[in-house]
Each structure stands twice: as structure tokens, then as C-alpha cells.
Image (cartoon, rainbow, N blue to C red; front, side, top):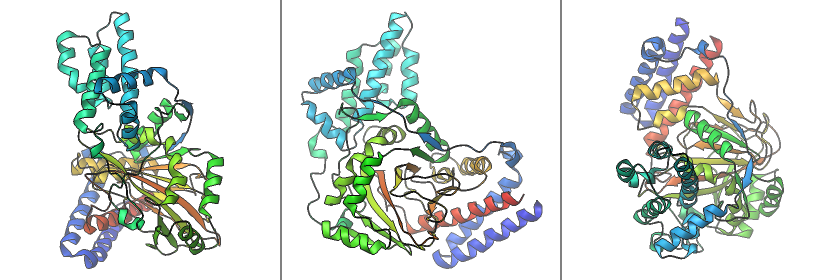
Length: 470
């Protein structure tokens, strides 16, 4: 075992030497210090409270099977109309804000559930303060507006709850149309990179004609994202819708270039490039092709809002819709994060079944904790080490986890991952949606931060290799 630790230290030093030649001596010294700290923590795990690799007997599952429920909820729409009337705005002002990723629908769901819970507790003669505190800690942060009132009176009315939601929306500017981007126009989609261009998302509760993700599936998905930084939502996109989209995109699995040419004919503004060997990245946001993928998002939008529950003043936006067409014999990507500057969410949906030969996504579970600024360095390393002990290796979707067309892979954007090589003579394709805060858009991290993600991914994968031999 100690010989393996020495080998790991040697691998750390080798990685640092390679990285330091590329990004400078100071970064190399920093990574060296981090590597030494990691080795010391692994060796002294019992003294800092880390898990022993042998303590975990079961490998966690990151799969959540999507289940659906009706969005036709009269009580929710009644609350929406009452709040709109209190604000003196038409009901369409709420739907417009919800389509711009403001958490209108999330807050209305919370308002409906809290109102029902408060009514029930009042009928039973029980105090409501504990119930409201539980909801506030669970993400209904707008309840802090009436915390003082509840502490003084030990009760709250439905109108007071509605007023608290309305005040949150007004202070955040959700009902002010001047805070929304009006449009992008006919321009190259590359001009939209990293900025809000006003792309809309579908409604999932204010539109009563759709099926929404059930409460149990949402909670399971959010738990996986919080603990491991990933979740595979099975059957997120309907097969029929997927088939129609494939036809509309004119996918050609023999060569990515053919698909690119077909997209250019549909809309010359689609910008595309090859960032890695064998992959054509097509930016669809801001083009007419974006419309084909609009309704896909209904499945995971409730998870996006709950996982990225935002305090007053922070705005989410749809930062990317990208089609990645993979050529036959494409190479591995390097390890990377989609956005390590702040919490965000990326969604990957394959258009064809991933497999060991076609390639898929390799994800390092728990690696999002490395870039969690709310934790200290010891807590970050502890989080990663516990995830390593539980998973016993990288999660390879398409190899040791089935990843079929229409399954949505949800990643915390700070999670380290990479696309794996295609060893076949047939291509594949995946659609990527990204949701970021306007205060920390994609691309806001420095090149040094991107390099640190590559080094961290390589080091974690080597730790996995060492543990597999132990």
C-alpha cells in the first residue's frame, strides 16, 4: 500500500511538471502543494474523518426513472391570478417571466403546497412556525419576508403568503419587462456565446396541457446532484419527439461535416467548430434550429429551478444549446468543467444510444466539491475522497451505465467530465443545454482555472486506478 502511495506521489509530480511547462511555474507550485495535501489527507484519513475505501460496500446509483404527473392544478393557477391582480399586471406578465427562467412556477408550486400545509395545521390546532421554517430551509427563501410576522403572531394568512411571493418578484425585477433582453436578430450564433440573448424556455405548470416531472423524481435527482454532481434522468425526452428532431436536424452518422452542411442550409447563422479531434460543435441558440429543441426542456426545468434556487437579485438564463456531432474514430476529450465559476447545470441528451464502441461521457462523481467556494479546502478534499470511495471509479455513461437516446444526463457544471472515444465506424450525436447565472456566465473562468480542472481530473483518475489495484 505504501509503495502505491509513493507511486501516486510520483504521478502527481509528473503531472505537475507537465502542467508547469504549459501554464507557468507558479501554477505548478500550487498544484504541487495541493497534491502533497491530498496525499497527506489520504494517508491520514482516519485523523481528518475521511472514509476508508473498504468501508463502502455498495456503489450508489445515479439513475432516476422519470415519472410524470398532470400540471393541470386549479389551485396553483388560482394563486397565480390572485398574485397578478395584487401586482396590477396581466396574467401574461407571469408567463413571460417564467419563459425567461425566472422561478415564477417554482414559487407558485411552493406557495400552493405551503398554503395547503398551513391550512391543515391550523385545522389541527398546531403552530405553523416550524412548518414555515422547514420550507424556508428547503429552498422557499421568499418566506424570510414574513419570518418576523410569524414569530410575533404564530400564524400567517394565505394573503400574507401571496404578498411575500409578490414582494420577492418585484424586488427581483421579474415583473418588469425592461429587465428582459428583447431579441438577438439574424446574426452568427457565435455572437451569442456567454451572453443572455432572450432565449425562452417552455412553461411546465402555468401551461396546464403538459405532463411534469413528479415530486419524487425531482427530489431524487436533486439529491444525486447535491451529493455526486450528476444524475441520469431516464426517458426524459419522448421517443416520437426525438425522432422528429433527428429528421429536422438531418443527422448523418457517417460524417459530421454532412450534418453541418445541412444545418447551414437551414440557417446560415449556425456557427460551428471543432474543439477536439472528431467532434463538430454546432451552436444553435439564437438560430431558427433552436425551435426544434425548445419543448425538450419541460422534463428537467423543475430540477433546474430547485437545484439552482436563487436569492433575490440573481438571474438564470439559458446560456447554450449545442449539437455535438461525433465522427467515427473520434478521440477522447480532455477532462474539463463546463463552468467552475459558480453553480450551474448542464444537460446532455444523446440522439442515438451510447455504447462502449460509440463512446459516451466519463464523469468523476463528487468532483464538483473541489470548486465549491462555500467549503474549506479540507472539506473539499473530504467530499471528493468520499465520492471516490463510494463510486470505486469514474462513471462511464454508455459503458458501465446504460445511456439511451432520450435519457438526460444532468451535471453540476463544476463536475469534471469528458467525452470518451468512438472506436466504431459509425458516428453519434448529443444535444447539450446549459443554464447559468448572468453574474457568472460560461467562459468567465480563467485559462488557469481550466488547466486546474484538467490536472485535477487526471489526478483523480489516477487515484481511482490506484484504488482498483489495492
